[in-house]
Image (cartoon, rainbow, N blue to C red; front, side, top):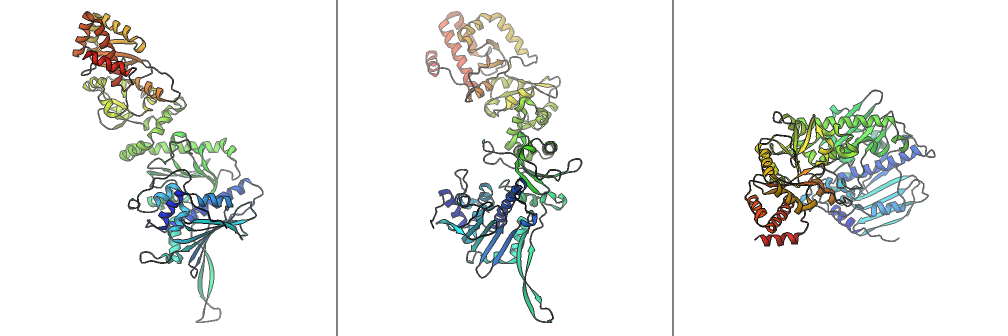
Length: 624
């Protein structure tokens, strides 16, 4: 019998478990019961799709057996079981998804964090065990196998005798210490409390054989012991209970038990819908994105049940992509147990359920926005990107559903505002919703074009997320007010400064034409401006592609060579403009030098790369 080694990361986790830095050791039983329930779900699902498997619900249960003399605890299930290969891969390798960044021991207060996040629940048993034996007989296999380990030194797998399908986990408890009594886990009341606390909702009976005493028949004072099997859990799924009978703690515990997340959710939504189509649903909005949320590996979807029986672990059809962060369960008696994945994808019933869920989530988010702003902003910080993508995706098909849930930073309020709030605070006669896009709030706030509109009392939305500008262009308008970039050549408002600039253009048009010839196709126009206030130069744009969009699209792997139609604006009140005028009349070489430097300066202000840094440096030296 060959000794096998745990992988390096597995050893690190086992070290945490064996040395027991967690104070809440009782969660090991919750984890093992949840694993047992999952195993039964899998075989029950197999029975639904395989006509050769014909089991009754009474065939499925979890059993806890106590041996006080041997100091062992046995957790049995009638689930799908594990093959030799599955025992090796499932129990020999922890957190196969990748390397882990563990918290230091003084930061971890209980077992939820690492156990919940990385799915290492089985190994929590090493918090209380000196040795663990796992016997398993897998569905469709002739042989059964036993996995044995005392911890970090590795494990063995060998053939064993086990006639029935399923898995048995035998825990050899540690000896009691001054700090902790491991023998408490052999006591009936302790086990009852743990099951009630963590696993009452489990849909399968959690049985326990108890030794009781009774008066012998025909005797007045002589008693005898007998065995009685009891069920420890109510088996009523949480989503089918009356919400008035449940506390936030109940909902949060269910969230963790189902491993939807390792922290408390931001919000839960308990739905019961009756009518032509009836279903129960329990949905959660996490407080933070899961670690793989922004990867291709992330799968959205809700657990789908029919009359309490799992049909599909992740039914993606129940959620639009922009609500893909939502976790939870849906249970409907109107869905057939024998329905296939292909039939589900085309099911009108599923579409109706999904529409109800999508509408309810929107309503709850809008309610949170209006009544609990701090919590909504916390949500938006985590998942606002999903809502924005939902507006932009599918050519704006769902923009009207999501437009009231979007927030942008306001130049006036110095905080996030909704579009409705922006409209409510618009100046009288204002025709457009003004925005400016940039890399960060500080840089955007210092942009030269911002100064003018702020002085005139206009509120500006600062778009600092990469998707923001694409979102507003896809929306086009809100409440019949069009979005307008302040970098746009036409702001749609009458500005006295523009009239002065027009007069300068009439008098010095040849100068600006000469600059256009020097810069060539780098710009579409050069013109005077009084909008820039303290800056000598800046870009405006014509057309749909802004400078920020140019930067973003060109940074993409297949972005191509996208160019915004740049208008180079020269601050006619800046002393540099006087130098430009005199050089145009007296020194054409100096004029050309200044023209190129002004263009390069505008690029630097916008965060664009210099086309030729060496030439720019040389030009600076020439000017000096």
